[in-house]
Structure formats: structure tokens, C-alpha cells
Length: 463
Image 1 (cartoon, one colour):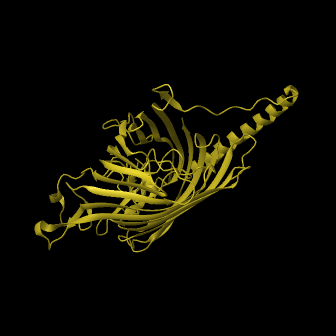
Image 2: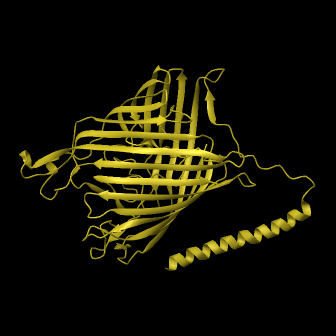
Image 3: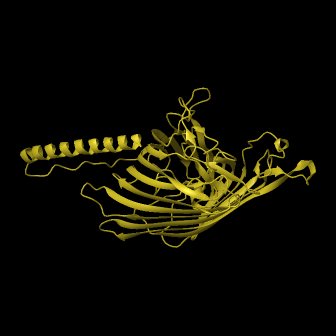
């Protein structure tokens, strides 16, 4: 409670100082303002591009972006600090994504891309081994080579890639979310069978008429050393050692404007610059990807084929072109099958803590919640882009509703999020505030029993 009062006092002091400064500045401006208005600041810039030939058809494009989070988190029940006292809430600031990407159109038919950076560093987590939270390890996110067999219609590539299903958000760009972030279950294998949503493989992609497609054959990362580690304590599905390949794909029918497919990163919001109506569906299939103890099976274990599918709808259109207003809707339904009762609790940039066994919920400590598992998930986000303001900035309020029905739990859970984007210069420079309520699941009844909140303020800049 003291932390919350401290936060509001800090906010009031900052707002009060800003207001006082603004009043003094206004008085000074009245005395010194010339007859003509001063020119407005120009926030435009040219993309960071290096031409490889005279006409610019061969080039290298560089992209740099940072997403910094300031958070107030209501911790899950049973979260304790290092002294064993209840840690009801936490304030922190951290780096959600600190990235660098470069791709080169070497010729009309050859493209190379490399993407690296760090994610999720806080004051307490995210560092290199034996370094605590400090000195995070920069790693490769994407690295692939691509050849245009039939330009636009059929491109084939190989490497550590992001061309995948089962949904549009399976390849979501982190540069232009309509919301603060992705729901995370859109990357259903995150940090288990993949490297931060990427796998090594071969892919094919293209657009034929109104059909946009991407398919891939990948070799998922193997996490656990041996299937023989399964024993009678592991009666629900868990990841196992494997040598099988996985297949994935996503197909979308584009009714109105066509989207670029040069890179795999699907756009979160076009901010009224395009009229989009796409209906899509996709899949992910990995034979023998999980296993569990089974006394009736040979060797006392059995394996499961992982099979996920999704269907989604993306709709965005300008409402008033003069005022640059727009409406946004994205809705998706996921069917996940990892095997019997598989369920993962995930907390983004989870500061964790020590668990009090008597009070801790099924969620665990910090901001974790049941997020990915065998079952169904329905997800919908809606936003409205308001007219441009005098400083050419724009506001975009939005809301999110998530419904999850996991086989492991006895009842469905729900989550609500509301947020506001302030676009200073489109997606290139924006500030986003979001407040969300996540479900708390009772460890005895395995049903939702209350909710906890989290407020996040993000500064986002990319070049």
C-alpha cells in the first residue's frame, strides 16, 4: 500500500511541476511570440538504408528498436521477498526488447536477413549465467537466406526463420503492435521447441492472387536429454528428447488491400493507411513432441503428437481520411494439443520471489498465470484511432478480451486488458499505457478465484 501511495505522490508531483512549468512557459511565450508561428518540429526521417548500386534496387536496410517498460505489478498470492515477508506488489523498469535487424536485397532474387538483440532484462532477471540480472547475452533471433523462384509467387529460404503458423500473430512484428504486446500464446512453443519463436528449417512463401501463404518444415530444438527421464511423477505430458521434424503453415485470403510479404513480420496496425480484411487459418504439427508416464506402455512411457491449429480475422479500415481516424479488429481462435493435461505457467519479465506454500496459488509467484497448454483459447482486440491532434500526434484507445479453457483446469479463465497508445510519430515513436487483470487459479479447485492487476507504461522507438 505504501508503494502505491508513493507512486501516486510521484505522479502528482511530476504533473504539478509540468503544469507549473507550462504556465510559466506560456507567459513567456506571450511576451516573445513573433507575428508568425514558429515552424513545427519535423519528426520525419529517411530509413537507415545503404545503397549497393546506383538506382537503389540493391540495398542493405538497418532497423534498430528499443521497448522500455515501467511497471506496477500486483503479485500473485503467496509471493514473498528475500526476507520471507509478503511481497504484495512490485515496481520496476526494464528492457522488454532491445534489438537490431539488418537485411539485404543482394539482387532481385537473393535476400539475406540477420536479427539479434536481447529481451526481458529487469533489475532482478535476464542476465548472463553467473551474472545475476546483469550483462545479458545478445543472441541471434533470425538468420536466413532466401531465393525468389517465381518473384512474389514463390520464394524459398532456409535458416533460423520466422515464417510460421498457426496464426497471423505467429509471425507478429514487434515494431507495430496495436496493443502493448502480443498475448504470448500466439508463440505456442516459446522457448521450449524454438529459439524465441524461431526454428531452423526450410520455408516457402508467396502470394498467388488474393491468397497469401507460408509453409515450412522445421527441426524443433530438443530440450530434455532423454525420454527415459519420465517417471511415475510425470503423468501429464511434458517435453521430451526427439529427432522428428515439424511442419507449420499459415494461409490468408486478402479481400481488400494486399499486404507486403517481403519479410515475415505481420503488421499489428496500419494506423489507417490501408484497408485490410483478411481471413486466415494455420497449423503446427510435430510428431512425438511430448510424452508422459504410462504403466501400460512399453518402457513405461508414451508419446504424443503435438498438433495446433488456428483461425483468425484481421480487419482494419480508415473511417475519416481527412482526420486520419481508423477502426481496428483482430480476433483469433486457437486449438492446442500438446498431449494430456499439458499446461505452462508464464509471466513476462517475472520478478518472481519466494513462494509461501500455504498461500501460493496454482499460478506460482510474481505475475505468472496459466498461459499455454492443451485446450482452446479465444482472443480479441479492438481499437479506434482518434483524429490527429495539433502536434500531429494521435491517440488510440483499445481493449482486449481473452478466454482460455485448458484441459488441466476445471473451469475456463478470463483476462481483460485496456490500453492507450500515444503516437508521437506513428509506430516509430510512441508511448503506450496498459492495465490488465490476469486470472488467479486456486491450486485445490483448479478454478479461477479472483484476478490481479498489472500496469505497464512503455516507451517505444524504432528507426
